[in-house]
Length: 372
Image (tube, rainbow, N blue to C red; front, top):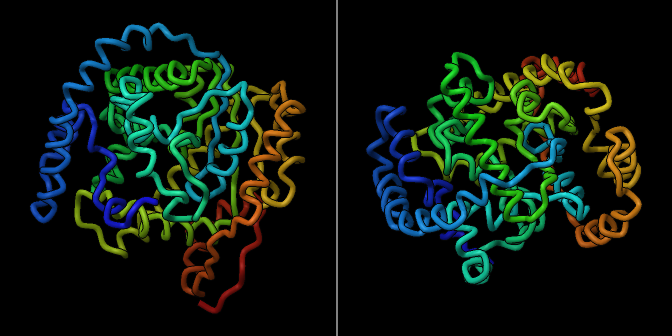
């Protein structure tokens, strides 16, 4: 079982490319002296792992870049805490799909080099459940590809969470506002390489990918994969708001490289939901007919087989019947799973009603009446 001390001290950028870490710092222009120890630890671990990263590149880089990707990957879209992980876990049960594993996500730049011995060596460090929601967790279960993307590219939306005072990474590389042609092309190259490495590790060209940032990247994803399939999953906005704050408290705050208050977190949660979800609503019409399906978390939770069958049918995916026993095995494994339960205050309900009114209308959720 992962110890609390370990969970809080490790940073996602510990084995980033040194050039990425250096460039992100130069793009930031400053760092917070109060967090000097964390900056020093990241720098030292990046330096210490450079020989292994370079060795992996020497051995595998050409093979990875020659990896052919299926023209129709499946992208799971939706805001954090909307049920994207549950859906990802389910679809990853289908053996036709490759996916990023937690092991590869957390040790991306040395994951191929140490796939046999390193994976066994670090397996005991992975928790049995995720910090923010008690979902099952292991080195082999699916992960979100934006996390390792922040290790290999300066064009990751997560840099706007690692440096929470700076929204420029989100605006340029998620919303693609003010991005130069050169920066856009670099994002495409980096993201394509990321997916090639996942496919190479899995030995499966067709990937199922879960990444909330991709919810606002439909245009750019279609430019890379015109035949891609998209599944958008939504959840009651009140639940998303409370659960996102809990996610920040349990996980994201441990990764901050700048001071950021609780009030700042609340405002960022409201703003990022607005920016990402409105962008999705603007762009979803770009997806060719038959390549997008929208589902609710609440429906997936209460009737998973029906929702999965509809997904396979609408997106014209083969293999549903063969995957049913595997879906059943996973669902039996999490059969006694209990979600965290939150009750927002009247003030919070009023804020969500006011700031996210578009979401209630878009996905037909009922607003609660409050006195505030």
